[in-house]
Length: 330
Image 1: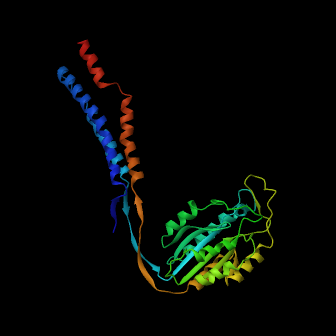
Image 2: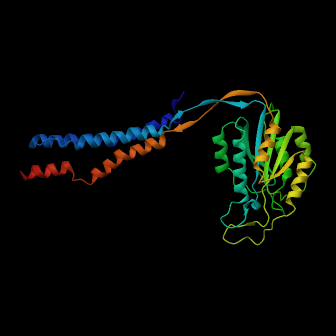
């Protein structure tokens, strides 16, 4: 059931700022009424219209400042025993593409992740990034909209940059932090890591497989790479970058070291099948997923209508001044 709430209820005090112009306008209208009564003129009604418009702007702005939201929370089933973490290579080589204006490796990696995530709706999913170290951006959640928003807004190439610039900025050994630093909940029995990278990395070190075995992490590497790609930050390719034709073999060695699997970026359906096989079947539980509809933009837009009326009236002759001039001429 939907429920109305306010994120910043004290923001409604903004409406008090409208009391001052309302007070001045009311005094002005009283003086104008006295002049009209003295001259025997009828009330044109414009004053009441502006008074209502001023009050509407004040009230709507105050409510908008309180940030009202409708919580359309729905119960949905989620796996109680499984989580998946998508880790994206965010080094500079992920800018590479087939040509200027073509999708970059990073763009393609995000698309692949969205497709895989959509195929696992009951599994909590998180997001991380990797340069020469791994960083969490979103811990596993059942909320698909939060996952998509994180992909679109919270991760980007070299944000943050690697801690040091060596010949290769990517170091997949940095994934050892996923096993050591609690990226998965302790009670999660089935932990799946999906790494999307071009594979242009340093060699395997013993710390990575040791950390993955201890943390019981299953791994899928997605090789986001095509031959003859270059980095096009302008219309011309960067002359200092060269794709590594050995990257697929390097990635295969990493997969073998952690008892994982490697797929090319064009095998999305097979990757989904493998992920489903790794996660298998398991118990589910009901979880309420918040779905907040923000009303502030609509209230702000509604306040524009009476505000437009007030601004339009400013260009009309000053009623009170006109009445005083008329009185003086009689």
